[in-house]
Image (cartoon, rainbow, N blue to C red; front, top):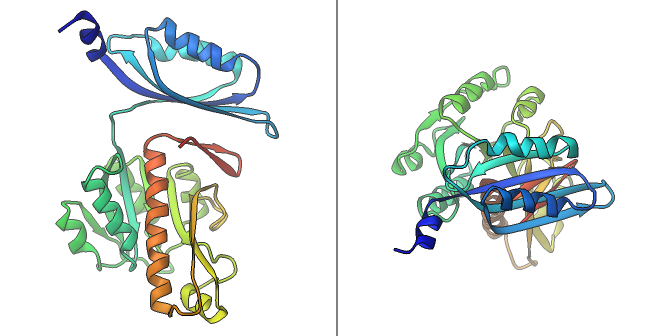
Length: 288
């Protein structure tokens, strides 16, 4: 094996994400820093929001495994530039706690994609206010936790404990039909993703597909977003739609809608796990 091959084998892949007030020379300064620390940039993406006056960047790079003081050195670069930044091990899987109620299509899709390594996550636990999907979770070797939720007790202390004890990095509301408190939304800010049908707010409440059918909709869809205290109004990560017509009944609309929800949620979870999403106020920057 040649010297070049040995050097490459000792590199550790990492992902750096950052945002800061926009100004000239930011790409150069970050790239120069990585070069000076013996890093090899594998891919990068950046975006300048002129209206907000902010700059966003994601770099996937390989760094010498023996590199020491990297983070403290980068902080010395970042501080005067008012950078908000994070560094991730590109090989580490995001641990995901999935919350679900009685609609299992999104859960089933995530379990399948995770087990087949289509998305870089490890499902740490499945938590539900019903027992419908206990067998599905245990079939995949995943811990299942049933919480008896009532209007008086939403079991949020238990949710917090489970998030901590399972070592989770992300919470996914895979059709979890309970509203989280403002406090829990703040605790999980940027770490909880929800999926809902895009009929909101036109078709609020129960049976949205039945409501859509009665109104003769021509497009149905789904939206995935980060959870905030403003119900279903968090920063949008991904959306998709599909055309429908008068020949479809409620069951067919529900099936199509469920397929859209599953793939939209899977994309959002994958992009989060790959550290491709940066929150920009009430919206997101997604480096695909």
